[in-house]
Image (tube, rainbow, N blue to C red; front, side):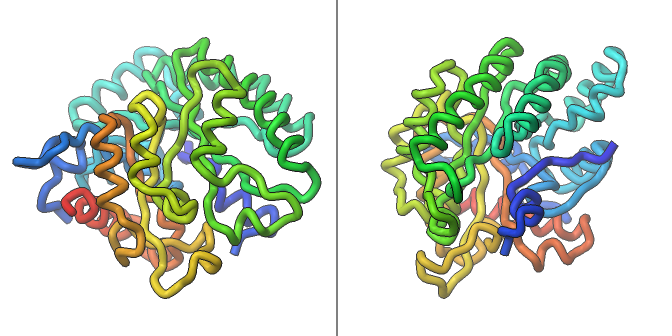
Length: 321
């Protein structure tokens, strides 16, 4: 079974909108650097989909272990094929390799028509049950920051209703749902009606959903493009943050020119104040997964093994700033 994570790059492309060993592997696993304050409780997750690759779940484990990551993306489709004993053995193997599971992508298409949404929602309980057996407690998805037909209020009501239905199912299986806002101006200005593209707006949607198990998926690229600071992160609690993506932005572009699907590996250019972002997470005691999500053409052109090595090196650099 191929580990396929439905991501925004896939969606925008389909929609025609898309433009060896580490020096301190302990940091990648979420350990505290000597003398480091505040404590680093989060752990890096190798998310092959986020760096532009696909592989079997077994290959993902091997690559994560080889390059010092602390977790990998769950693969509900693969887990569903295993017996209870088989899943238990897999989890034991992961534990022996100091690996855990990160967040799963929400397998429900809530952005399109009612039929597509209902079809995905009907399948969600079975997926959530499989993830629960594997011990997965975090699920995430993104919010498109534009719509050509729905006004902001119409879109808000639709998202609140549909995501509430998803969140209720996930809550029954002990899972939290993280919502990612998309910050670049080139995204939310691309169609007639801008939609949620800041942390404060995402918070309003979370309150409207009202299930108690919905939080944010923080992304340093969107945080930067929304012109937010560490102070915005400090308005959150650990339990408000479900998962985190880390990256840098291309140099030499104005805020009006930054594009969602053109980024750099963490700490590659210094455009995004990655240290401020990570220190904010440390200060609130965030203890979940953190992934690289560079949407970078040059990285995707590399062999998968080399791309994972470069990603690990970039994460290590960012975590030691």
